[in-house]
Image (tube, rainbow over all chains, first blue to last red; front, side):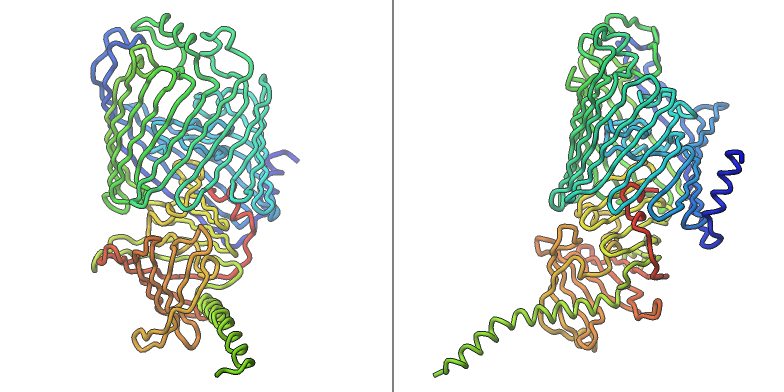
Length: 385
Length: 241
């Protein structure tokens, strides 16, 4: 029997005709961003405009169809227009999940994974979409899933997940996880004495297996601590290009952090992150020495450094009418500081408006001080249905 | 002069009295819980209307799966559609669809947001609180026993609750919720008892904000269906989607 027919037969076999349920949500976002160029950046165009403006219009929809308690079909699509005539459609998710027995889920398709536990950084998120620490909540909800076959086995608070993924299929290339080839990943997750712990391992084409784990624990009523560590190959092309002897081999990425909620409803998140793929000081010096104004970077993704301190203060009440937010990402290797200040206002049940200001500062040779962008100001309006 | 056997009997009575009172309070709390969807596992849908004065400011809908000490709340209103809140014993996770991951949250964070989220995750007080007798009171025309509830686990939404239940059968009448500081935070009035699956169950709760007096929420249980639910529904690995 051909594979497609076998799959359809399996879906029909586990589906029951009752209790079908459809859940959907949709949103439209229009966002305008003004960008101030860093005219002294070695990576900036030769004659940059000091200020430029861009508009980003998004329409997105998610659909979940629970054909029965045993079959779920999910899809999420995004339509994005960054400038007139440049409209792109993306599938964020498209999958089918079968539950042939009470202890197992089988899933196939493109799916957003949730393996990491860090807030801004998540090295053990082997299948997760890359995180942007300046926008940890993905305000545009534009992140995309990974194409995979996956099995999840459940026993009480313990779950074992096994995924065979193709990170290079239908996903924008960004970050070391998104390289091509096959990727097999497994996770064992459980709760022990209030601690949510997970061990992860992955193996892929042309790479030595990665392994690590993560933990979260809540202390009392207001304090949460979490940590992640992953031993992995160096996957950064920048390291290979600029860090000579450090360009290959093994490294470790790790994050440790916590969040605290005050009585007045303020929530603070702090994380210390070490990026095993980040450039060393020597490598960074070579990058700066070789950069020439007007010369574009040889890779779409900018190189990063190794050690970062992240801090975020916001309202613990994500449903409040006004939610202010302040983010700081300090590069401890070179004195870089990215700061973000934002305010979102709930205009009605369906409408939300927000503004965000981002500033990149630091010594001229640092990652932020040498970035081609000095600051951005963003204003947006979102409608949800 | 009290004779020796009498003195011993009095001592026994004095020692036993608090234990008897404790038993009475626990029994009354169990009786009260029977009016609050006290099935081993169930699914319910509820709507919460929030008022500022007489003006309806928001109407939100939720679907809740409950099993023992575990609960999964799915948010259905447009603004937060797709969010889920999972409680497994004392542990809590919030899943935001846009973030594509679950966030471990603390009990205090659960109280933030819609002020009734914490009340949805656990309907039965006996799971989170130990009870003692706190006197009697007449509310309206109803003779009530007041139970003093103290949180006995960190995940309890409130540190202290004064819970007035009808003397004759334990029907919940009113609950006053307090922060650890002793400050009253809100008062709930249990109304409209209706049969769900053949059992009288509180179907409407009016919650008055004691800090912003003009604000109140009305929680209406629209559907309660006792049914078996797989344990995996409450798995942190699955709850987000």
